[in-house]
Amino acid sequence: MKSKIFRNIEINKSQIIGLIVALITAILAFIFLRDNQVFYFILGIAFVIAGLPFFIGLLIEGGMERKKERMFLEFARDLVENVKAGTPISKSILNIRTKDYSVLNSYVDKLANQIGLGIPIKTALNTFARDLRSPTITRSVTIISESEKAGGKIEEILESVVTSVSQIGRLKKERRVAMYNLAVQGYIIFMIFIVIMIVMQYRVLPIAAQLGGDDGGLVGDGGAGLPINIAGIGAGEAISPEELSRPFIYLLLVQGFFAGLVIGKLSEGSIKAGLKHSFILVVLALLVSTGARAFMGSATTVATGGAVG
Image (cartoon, rainbow, N blue to C red; front, side, top):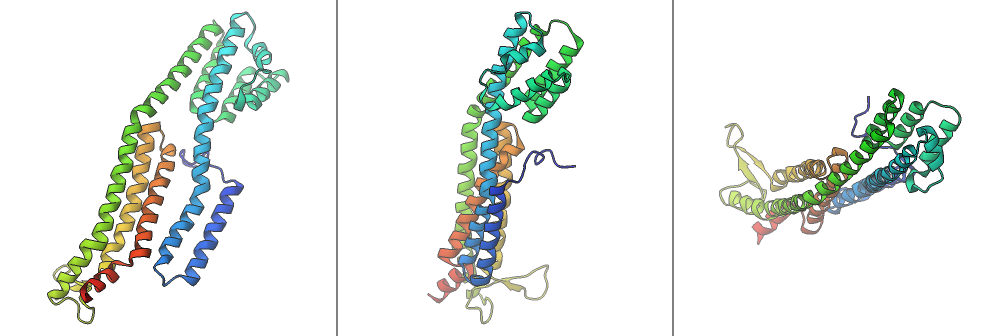
């Protein structure tokens, strides 16, 4: 069974092209730039190329979902007016099908066509909700279909649904506004974290390597090694600044991914919405880290240069 987070994510042509271009870029970089410091930066570019179509898709999907909910509110209001006039709900849907509901037009036409063909209203409404794939609309349509089946004052139930959808939309908007500052703070904190990691990698570790070299260091290594005693075995094994700094990039990537998920969950109430924040933070960490490596050299190079000077 697919995860609920990724259940509605579909691969389209642009995403496949992005993956192919990224794969070709990575292969060419591996063939021609494997021993070059730019290699990791090019891999970062390949990751951006692969993920950008998915990122744009998430943005479009989020905007479409909000627009669908807004248009469904208009559709429900028109339905209430027709039902209040004494028209059955099935006939009311046929009456309002000619109105413009923007992104909902094709879905409303399909709903009206199914009702016109004699398909039960409950079945048609369930298909309508399933096609829209919006939790808010699904809950509302389920209430409408069950109420229509049970009978009673359907107009009052429709009014309650309209009020509920309107309140949900307003609460979502208020939450996005309220959490905006928190999201910005999350981005700022992460950028500060990146700067600290870069300073650690290219300033603190080379200095520590030089101090290790002054105390004996690693013979034949120019002082660019840290003699570390692991579990008290022997005199210790020398670990270069490059080896010590390698986990920094992994730390940045993991931090960026999960920080993005948290930002999305807090600001929009959805982990899936947080994937776009995760993409931004991971790309930021990857490009800054690999870019620093490409233009400043590895930590070992910095340490060796400092020791020689």
